[in-house]
Structures are given as C-alpha cells and as structure tokens.
Amino acid sequence: MKYALLAIFLFYSAFASGQSYYGSVQRDSELKLFAYNVSFGGLTAGIGAIINKPKETPVHKAFFKGFYQGCFGGALQYGGKKMTYQIVEKDNYWCGWPAKLVHTAGTSIVENAALNRPFGRYWNLDLGPLRFDFASDAEDNPFRVRFSAMILYDMVAAGVQPSSSYIDWGKSLKLGTLAFYTNEPIFRNDKQDIVGTAYCRSFIYATTSRDVHKTVAHELVHLFQRREHLVFNAWLNPLTSKASTRSKNIFQYSIYVEPPYFSLFYLIQGYHDRENYYRNFYEFEAEWFATKGYF
Image (cartoon, rainbow, N blue to C red; front, side):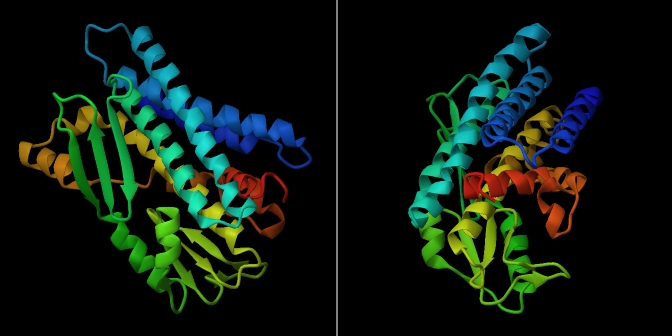
C-alpha cells in the first residue's frame, strides 16, 4: 500500500514538473493533457481496484479491470474540463452545467473502478454543500444525500480574503456550482492582482477581472481538479471499514469527507511569480482549458 502511494505520488510530481510547456506546439500540449487525464484516471483506479479487490481475485486482473475503466472515466474528465471553454466562447454561464455533468460522470466511473465495483452501478453529483449518490442496482441503497462540511470553510474563506464578498445566485444557478464575487481584487502581490480563487466546493471571482467569463471557467477547472483527487478516498476504504459501526453510519449516510489531497499536489507544484505562473501544472491546465490554449 505505502509503495503504491509513493509510486503514484512520484509519477505525477515528475510528470507535471517535467513538462516543457512554453513554446510547445498547441496540439502537442493538448495531447499531453489528454494523456495526463486518461492515465490519472487509469492508474488511480487500477491501484484502488487492487486495494479493494476480494482476496481470491488475482492482482493483475483487478488492476486491468480498474485501469481500463479508469481510463474511460479519465477521458470523460478531460472532456468536461475542455467543455468549460464554451462558457467563454458563447458568453454563456449555462454552459457550466454540461461541463459539470460530463466531468461528474467521469469521476463517478473512476471512483467505481477504484472501489472495485461493477461498471456503471454507482453515480454521484455534487451540488452546493451536498453530495448525491445514486445506485442503479435495486439491491443497493438507491439514493443517499450527504453533507460536506468543507462548504463552511468555503464560506469563511470567501468572507475573509477580500474585504467584502457576496453570493452570486445567478451564476451559481447557471453553473451548478456555488459562486461568490467581490468588487475588488481578491488579494494583491508585487506582480499582479488575483481576480479568482477556487476553494473546495465553490469559487470567488472579482468583477475587476478583464474577462470574467475566462476567470470563471479557469476556477471551474480547478474545482474539477480537486474533485478528481478525491478518488484517493477509495484507497483508504480498507482503513475506514475498520471504524466503529456508528462512525461508518455517520460517514456513509450523513457526512461526506473531503481530505485536501489536491492541495498537497498543488503545493508540490509551487507558487510562482507572474512570468512563471503557469509552471504550476494545475494552473497551466486550468488556463489552457479556459482559453483553448491561447495565453
């Protein structure tokens, strides 16, 4: 288990930091992003399937089953991110819903595969502070609603970072994602004004942004990235199954836990000044999909 964690950690750190994005041909970068998303889904699902397999199932069979299903889910995750550009191209925030639903289908497939579950049996959707789980098999609990406490962090962060912020109910409805706004830069540094920030389940944008549609699309991709990394919850399934019955019932039916996996990977990429800002792989990916590579 620990060696699997180390391998995946080193693989993605090396992949992201080893890319030479500047001066790359656009198609080459597009292929690299596609390969990253597909391989991330495949490897995390494959390793998760090994961790959660029945004892009698051979390791290679569990990995292969999880891997090819995870690759398919990863391709959908890539497609969902790519669709965020429609928000910019069509000047229409309603385009956030198709992007969200396609990406959510991908994360559902990857999570299913990582838990070694049958393909297509379980689906989930995040809306505001709630996570909805659906099961297509009548033998399973067909519907669950759980609360994510991370929305409380989002609300505190949105209220603290700028001097004043407000919920944008219109964009929240159109995007299917909770959105905040402020009428000033979220914060400033020596090189630039920050006009958008993604939290855990929501984001904030500044109305001072030169292109609010692009800022919104960029932050939406960051939320998708964070959502993808929750697949690591499946890796911890054998540990959580040892918890007390009362604790398991709380987390299975009432509270959804969202550890900050993505934040760890983001910090490894580091914060950079304006000239080197997109050396952080996750910032590069978010800006690429929000601008279709023109930045």
